[in-house]
Length: 242
Image (cartoon, rainbow, N blue to C red; front, side, top):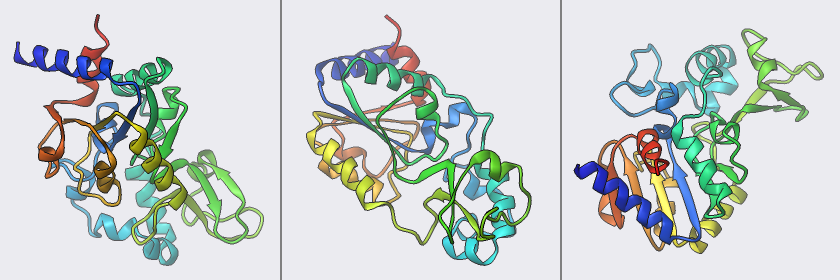
């Protein structure tokens, strides 16, 4: 009964807002079967001879591209994943005119697959790749259809996923766009994130009002106006009920 009251309170908060921005992390996609990174069952806690943060670094990619791609395609690329109720709810909220932007740390493309339009992919997308030498574009099918070190079919340069690796900076234009939307917002919904990764976690300070929906506690809970503990997709399914 208490959960029902809390979901009702979340619905009331959202109904009163006119300029909503969403900030999400890996927990938004776990209900779609995409593993997160830092939970007990996350990628970082899976046994591997090499540290995932080391494998998924710019330096490792440039020096050991074959090992990088073997790991990347096995652990990171999840083409079978489909949008869950969380993604679907956000698309519905966007179509209502209330949700102005989705800021995501995820690279799975599920927000766009759910037909959300204004999606700021801070960490890039698995669906886009470029040659580091001639900048030729390649889609995900090209990556999946090649084994070992993946090279450009025009200049033989390395093909790199357009995702932010460790040791790389976020796109300043994307960060600026995210900040601009959050400053304009009257409600920032934060979900599925440990709020430990910067600069994304630092975006909270630009929000006037913050609603956090998360499975576990974070160090930023005390800075949020309302906190609800639960799975984002399940919560959104309840929000869509009349």
